[in-house]
Length: 83
Figure (cartoon, rainbow, N blue to C red):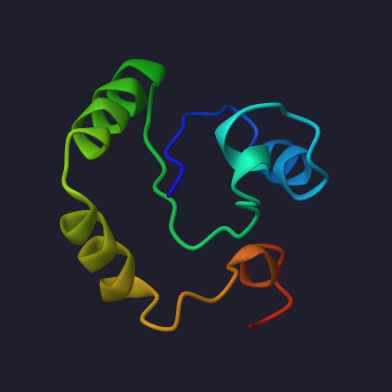
């Protein structure tokens, strides 16, 4: 599972889906958006990112499964295309 902060979610998803960023997501072929949160400012986004990164895998999975139990790619929904 990849956790990160971005100012432009669409651009970041595009980069990951097209393997434009070397690192964890490219190495492990992580390219589905299964959960996201919005914040009002970068400081709160970074704080939340650090919090989530400190969680054990099971707790992260439960967070995703509360809103996306089937682990579907949320990009179509985000674009208004439905899921």
